Figure 1 (tube, helix red, strand yellow):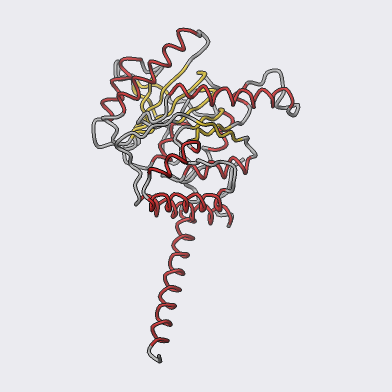
Figure 2: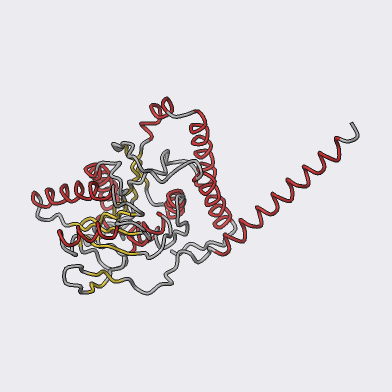
Length: 335
């Protein structure tokens, strides 16, 4: 048995070295990303593909010019984007025809696509005008979180909705989130402090976040998914709970709505650029005491998902960075 102890000691040393290296890498990367929320690039410009004129790009701190903005991140979505956009525009046009006070814009954020996503997006701009449909080009791939952040920061709506390019959630479900935001904001306007209840205040002045949720579909999903996928998902939920705390059962649904006031606080602070930015949004909402509402939405599986089991390690990495960044004070929150 004398040969066993050297092997155990070797394994322990290897584990300690690996753990120390991983911890050092996490701290270093969290420190490197401490300014990820700041604007280092020049102010973006929208281009009208019909006239080739440049349209000034608004900023989230400007007064709202539209009732609602829909932000769609797109990375190599040449095939799925046309159907989702057509359905979205049809809904928005029908609602605008019924309600003359309803105004909207759709922002398509091309996250460095290598296919025909840009061409598809600009076809919709030509059809619906640059006032209603706009395209932001990121040049290279940054990640879904960064695409959403750019769209939110340069939108004109009182309400800002993020939704996926695959149309997995029906756009009509935005009314569920919208109605709940109105209920919470109106309650705050009537019963909140004197500053919030000023007669000149609007719904967009009250910070509120509404999270679309697929949690009601979990039981069916557990029955149809492979056991190892269920194991990974349960583990992911535990890590989310430890990182951001309780409150939202489904953080990863790509259907979320924010008032303009909430977007100003959240998206000027968000640092994660890829899959786990949703978890960071929950953390920031809690830090700012922004009311969060979780609302069940209709959802269907659309072929072509870019999330796979290999995404899990990347998600865990980002959550480790977030936890270290905020808890050590390296990631300062701008108020």
